[in-house]
Length: 138
Image 1 (cartoon, rainbow, N blue to C red):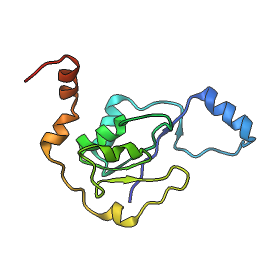
Image 2 (image 1 turned 135 degrees about the horizontal axis):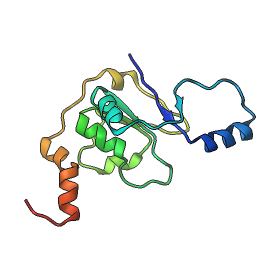
Image 3 (image 1 turned 45 degrees about the vertical axis):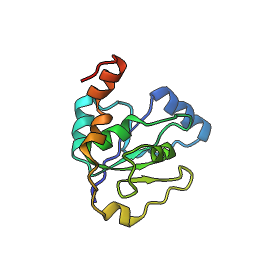
Image 4 (image 1 turned 120 degrees about the vertical axis):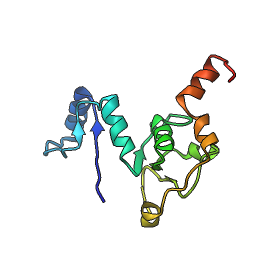
């Protein structure tokens, strides 16, 4: 399995946490101070079979990563338990993990992705979102 990790943090936030923890050891190479461009993110998403989504603890509803996974037909490992409320939720495609004790079943990683009906995927598209915002019917 190939894994790509890009954890973005602001320099100031990073420095404060380093000082608080008194941890000045060398950081892993996946800690980044630059964000991915939209093009880089789209390319990585398109080429991924599984995406990881760690939502902010106070966030409600879906994250962009969830929508990206749906559009890319990629599996999703997420801490967002709200995802079970949506019509595309499928235990073969989405694994909800506890942020404090994440456990990932190898069967989830190796089982094939199950296609979601195109009408359901379309419901979460940018085009459909714009139509809803502007109250436009087909």
